[in-house]
Image: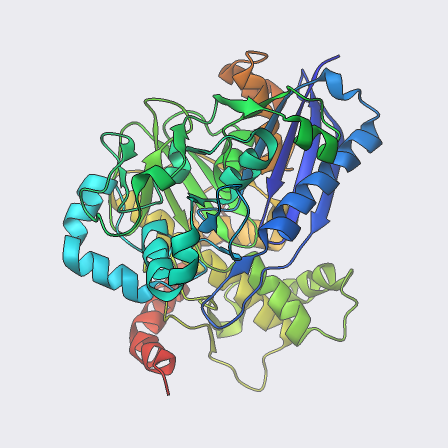
Amino acid sequence: MSYTLGIDIGTYETKGVLVDHEGRVVAQAARGHKMLVPQPGWAEHRPEEDWWEDFVHVCKALLSESDVDPQNIKAVGCSAIGPCMLPVDDEGAPLMNAVLYGVDGRAEVEVRDLTDRIGEDVLVKRCGNALTSQSVGPKILWLKRQRPDIYRKTAQIFTSTSFLVRRLTDQNVIDHYTAANFTPLYDIAAQNWTDDLADDIIDLEKLPHLMWSDEIAGHITAQAAQATGLAEGTPVTAGTIDAAAEALSVGVDQPGDMMMMYGSTIFMILRTAQHVSDARLWSAPWLFRGEFAAMAGLATSGTLTHWFRDQIARDLDAAEAFPLLAAEAGASKPGANGLLFLPYFSGERTPIHDTHAKGAVFGLNLTHTRGDMYRAVIEGIAYGTRHVTETFADLGQQATRLLAVGGGTKNTLWLQSTSDVTGIDQTVCQVTTGASYGDAFLAALAIGAVQRSDLSQWNPAVQDVHAAHYPIYDKQYALFRKLYEQTKDIAAELSAPA
């Protein structure tokens, strides 16, 4: 029997699976970690503790649980949160904590400076993306300006997956899908690094070698084999961002397929027939040569349900809180008895790209219950999701198949509310493990053990979620949009230094 192994580093948890040649999960393991918020608007991980130690722990757990001979693991795939910004030295050792993806807005000044200098139209045309908190280029410029000592010592700029692959193989690589988030340093047409638009950010030689996600980046070194228990010489794929691996795990493969990832954030990936650029969304080459995707993501989603549990439902046992809160919300009618919730607790990413946006609960009166409030939280996330799906539709990019995945699919209230608010039916597949399962498939694909058409056999559809209350939510959604527009100036003033 032969196997492939997939491990994914998420915002709050690392997950891994060991999969046989027919896609059956023979072992799975997980380990939690924290997102550090050293000050408002910042978000960090510790690469050694949160990425590498987690990878080693999960890898050893999978080998122990399965009792599989490491020699029978034919390839390894990994993914991680992204795009991140991590400066490392000549040995690949981190020089600071990793600056996370769009939830970290520290480079706001650099985003503005580069946009003013280059022009948003030029950025979208050349790079496929406007500059936002998701962009790595401004964060490297922030490093140069604010941490010059670290910048001078920097030998390479890694993202999270690059760091893992380097530890496993000694190779400095990055996949094109991730690299497209390095605006303004990636040329979407040439599919290569460029400093034409800004030659003062970083020497391009300090960026990893570009590869496609189904390519082998290298092989497990003796040192990595000793640390992980894997066999020396095992092939390792170039990897990708977690959301892309998650999309692949549920069969997003053809133009018109869209993934709706229910996690710490909502993230959407739509396979497109050609390159699509719009400043409100993100675009990138897909995982495979000659293919493209358009993406969108909210800044906070599942994170808000945890916040609500920890702050508003402290009387409930943490292990039982979510089912109890769902039951309370079930007693509240669709529309949360007139409550509106803005889910902008970490600003917002697509489509408004507003780092100053603030969270809000609006419409409270003395009759409202905790159940009303929890339903409002779920519906607020769904309204933010609809804002994105409408943006896709404005560009003529409507999903023909919407595939839901992620831990949030277990929250039936959230799943149903999303279909009700957006008016879009969803499909849930048998395996909802997510990115690590997609990593295992990519690993099998890279060594020729499977074909892309095998995805539907690896992970068949098992559930359909149909929109049931769309007309009810139309009025509420319009008010949601109006509430943001009428409060965004106040939110910006609240963000201004005292």
